[in-house]
Image (cartoon, rainbow, N blue to C red; front, top):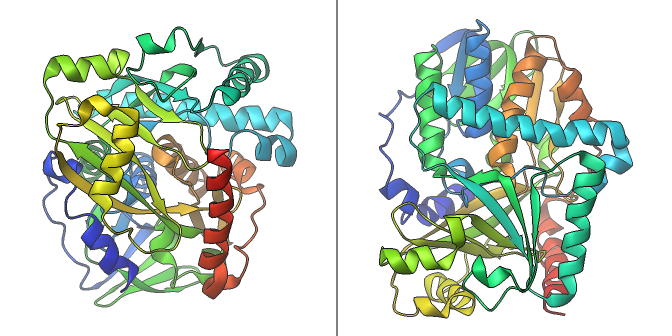
Length: 431
């Protein structure tokens, strides 16, 4: 079964798709056209780059293999979290402290960019301020607090509030967690509503989107030529933002990311008093395990709970019931709540979980490796790519300095190797 086929099945019972107004279908590419910039992939990174470029006066065409926001951009946990999945260490070691701070501040700029776009384009996407990291084991709470102190001291980030074990029951009505750090600046939202709002803004700015136009070949040159089954685009610049779906098209970089399946369930609508009691102020929460759970209460009073992952590329069996069991371990008071939606998809993970940005040729830029922490990062990544196309590549090149290893074992063995590695980390989570 191809990844596209499996991913289509995973998307069928999505709460997001059921509660968002779909974008009118965009035409398939059926001719040879010329443009300034061709963006491959209509997820948030591609849409963000296209919107920024159109606002700079460029003629932009997006090629999307399925539909706008069909992949991770429209199916993720909806948590807009400052920082990176890898933490700060890779940036400090490879870039030095000054650029590590600049890299972190880019994610804060990404948060501001999202807020500004929502306001400017009147995007109703259920934005709610507040995100909390909770410790599952008492022994990890001091580590979490030390991290918060370090962020305030080394990164001038004043938005973190330590929640002691005594205070935590006032925030989360669950006995599973033992302490937490609240980030008042981060947030959560309905990611598909947001992505479709950005797509509408891009169309209004003059961007052309071709759906059902999977790229079959990229011919480097000036101009570059991007081919599909029924047409082709000649472009002065290309921005590759297809992530795991470009595996066969751009082999030069595809071995540095691996598709990881991630899954979410959503309950039926709860009694409002019960929904209000679960998490104070309805902030989003994730735990601090390596293989983590994350959850939040939606605007329409449902528990949205995610965290089951697959590193093998195979969707776990009995997914709704197994995820329900995990949810009840945290919130047994939801034992009578039915699971109404269960869906998933693939995210692009790097070995070190740091983003992988760069060029495959002088006029072809790529954005990948968001590693499950991409809601903010995809937005700012698109802006950085647009800056680079326009000749202001300093910020893009700073992040491109992060070195990335290919997954061990090559294309055939990288998945078994990753499964073994994640089994080790999963064991550590339980110790």
